[in-house]
Image (cartoon, rainbow, N blue to C red):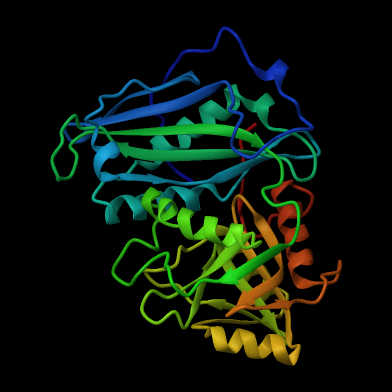
Amino acid sequence: MNYETINIDIQKTQHSRLPGLDINNLPFGKVFSDHMFLAEYKDGKWWRTRIVPYGNLQMSPASSVLHYGQAIFEGLKAYRSEKGEVLLFRPNANQKRLNTSAIRMAMPVVPEEIFMEGMLEMLRLDQNWVPAGDGRSLYIRPFLIATDDYIGVKTSDSYMFLIIASPVGAYYNHPLKVRVEKKYFRAVEGGVGSVKASGNYSRSLYPAALAKAEGYDQLIWTDGREHKYVEESGTMNLMFVIGNKLVTPSLGDTILPGITRDSVLQIARDWGMVVEERKIEVAEIVEALEKGILIEAFGTGTAATIAQIAEIGNDGIDYKLPLTTDQSFSKRVGLELDNIRRGRVEDKYNWIYKVC
């Protein structure tokens, strides 16, 4: 990665909260590191790049983001290697995807040097917040919001880019029970389902709550036109092992191009596995379940990494999947990803960026 160095004003915290961190109790996204990075956009340029102690923002009640939802975000992780190094997994892919989201949401792109230098400087300050041990990492949340003090439906003229970080444990600690959703939808063609817009997630909360009340952990979203094809599961990309093939929905403007998804597919192909990226009908999944040839189903994502699916509900019938073992593809690829991210094996894909 080649980018220009920028000047960042750094204000270090006087009172670190690290001594109060319970390393054995890391609820996802509720504890935050000591510092945060900020940059502002106004009059067509970025300025005021700075790192300050983590804290509340001061903003106008008329800020555009609060009324019209111009907000996008990313998620990536830093890992502690067995040598004590802090390693980032594919940060350049997150930077590019953030800007794809920005363009679709009529927001300014964030220059690579601001994204990368801001994140690296913050991580160097907060490097002791990166927990060691399997299942633990520092989750990093870059996000961009509109900040015009104006109640009117238009593109904002001012924005703020921020990065915060949270030490975390596992997102899911058990195999999931999911249900195929055929009333509500996550995204439609021509919409913003393929970008990380905040509104994509808020619209999913009510259907997900209904599913949880029925005993399911998450939903399998289907297409918004016919509810005929599977798309994503909760906040994850969706994959199936059917016979000897790895099958996943093909990308389009209703499915987020997941970085973990892409990583899994690259590894699978290198292992000689047959990979199919295509439309997948709900009926095909049900038939494969009934015939016993659907061997595995799992979700992929930065937060969840690899989340096994143990049970799929469809039209009132719950289908149990075979138990996974250490030889199951999802277990093996999850271990391979973890070994790469923690520097235990050769990084032949050039995915790892050493912070310090």
